Image: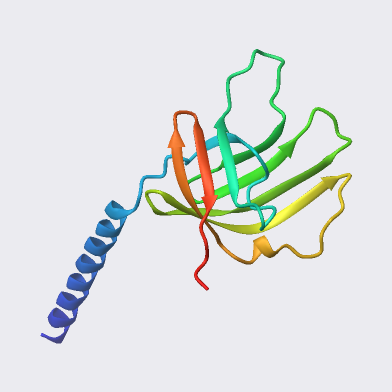
Length: 154
């Protein structure tokens, strides 16, 4: 009888937890950035003082032509890489690696994991952006996405 009672409690707990996680998933905003790459106005989250970013869809180029500048690649549903690309190797190539999450339909949170430097770079010793999540309001208009930093409560 003890075993039957314990088994009943375990089954009930499993069903309850499974039902709750499905409800949470259904209320989570759609992630339309998953597995997409965008041209950006600046490297995403490299400079903590930057409060606005513009992401533009990358047009298809003829064979043999390449895109250069700042980009953000939303690698999967949780990770991003923001990087710089140039036609030659005599430059500073920075990359920002981190995580992102939609907290609301019109709000996204970025958290930087690491920042790397290659080439002709002066490497800073501390990055405040790598310690603090950045919260942005997000708006879309055709092939352009605008991110505007939200004020943190004091």
